Length: 69
Ligand SMILES: [Zn+2]
Image (cartoon, rainbow, N blue to C red):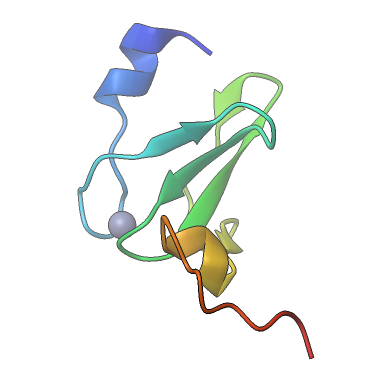
């Protein structure tokens, strides 16, 4: 991912900054709880293509997490 390109990208919903997840190849908006996929190096900035993040992904720290049901 090009860092300059990355810096230009904002969430299409809230226009907020996105966080690049290198491991998952996703751009995350923690405000909306959505992760936009990066396919072949190209960010897909479509809310309908975005993945809904888990609660523990939205929050930086969640010590009281009980686990999946
Ligand atoms: Zn957003």
